[in-house]
Every structure is written in structure tokens, then in C-alpha cells.
Image (cartoon, rainbow, N blue to C red; front, side, top):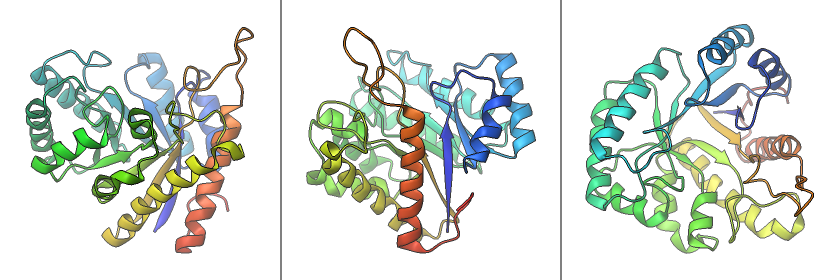
Length: 284
């Protein structure tokens, strides 16, 4: 099994022709790109840069963009259209912020049943992220959907659940296990009781939070090994303001997110090697 580190394009404003070679030099093997924001010119730059570097692409898609108030049918149509568009890019996988947190459980189930009908005709993994604002914003909404649509695949970002629950969620291990058993991709950000992103995961003040998230990621890794997957993808995802804390009045960031993400990627790569002794993708 391989560990493939993915670089996030969240908050990245330089040209892809500049950024992607730099990502590759840092040991990343792919890039995850918000699929709503880039205009045609920026997507053309992305395509040229992917071809030049050989990095793999994960489109980050959003049903109905950020308008979660749309109907189930509108979200289904948005899902289908974005899948069809993303597939023309030969993606490694497709990641979705899908559905709406405001729906009833019945509406969520109807939506994901329709998604599964679309996904069955697609050979590329289509993943649904555990994310606030969407159907999988909490352990409990996720549990209810999985009772009726058990064959979904996930991007695990447990930082959102910690934020929503306002606690570390070891008391919710049954649903964490259920998601881990269906996870194909990990967003490695660390949340805390007051938000989805600690100011700096290297700070000993947040050692408990870091250890908890690593316990949950380990469950995902163990399941991937059991399922015989050929690779694990992991993306350090500490993001810019308002996720990154800024000092009052000066509006200066309290940490360097590029530095933090590099630290996180190196740490999780080393932990994976220690646990599984596998050949790792990218420089050692």
C-alpha cells in the first residue's frame, strides 16, 4: 500500500504553472482543486500544469455551489453535471460537499440513493466529505443516512464533527468506525472544541486534539489495509482565514499554513511508514 500526499489549492492564488512544480518538488503527488472557482483561463493553466508535472487531480465539487437551500432535485442535477465535467479530466477521484444540512433525513436518503445510481456507472471513486453545511455535518446525520444507503464512500474530515459536537468524539466510535470502513481519502486537519482548525497543531496545548484525530485516521488506514486498497491519499488541509486565526486589530495570521501543512504531511507520512512499512509515494 502506498501513501500519496495531496496538496490543497485552497487559498492558493499563484498560477498553477508556478505552483504545481513546487508542490511536486515538496513530495506531493496530486492536487485537490475547488471546482467552482477557477474560470476557463485558470482551468486551462491547470490542465497544462497537470500534463507538465504528472500530478494527479482531485476535483473538489460542491452541489449547487454554496446554495444549500436548493431542492433535492436541484442538488441531484448539480451532482450529475459536476461528475460529468470532472470525469473529462481523468481525476484520481472526485470529492463532494454534497446535499444540505437543512434537509430532513428522508430528503438526505432520497438524495444519496440518486447519487448512488449515478455513481454505479462511474469507475472513478466518488466521495462525500464529512463537512459542516452538508448532509454529513455530524456523526448523527451520517449514521441515519448510512442505515439506508450503506454503500457510500467518504472523504473523512473529522475536524468538522469535533466542531459541531463541541468535544472530541471518541464517544461516537461506532459511527467513526462506519465512516472509516468507507473512507478513501483523508483531509488531515485538526479541530478543537471551539472550531474546525486549531491555531497550530504543533502547539503542545493541542496535543490531545492531535492525538485524537490521529486515532481516527489510524482507523481509516487500518480499514484501507483490510480492504486491500493500493494507495492511501491524505491531504493536509489547514486553510486560510477565517479557518486560520488572526490576531485582533493587527489582522496578522498567528501561523504560516504552508509551513503547518508541510509539517502535517511529513508527520503523517512518517506515521504511516512506521505502522505499515509500505513504499511511500514521493521523496523519503
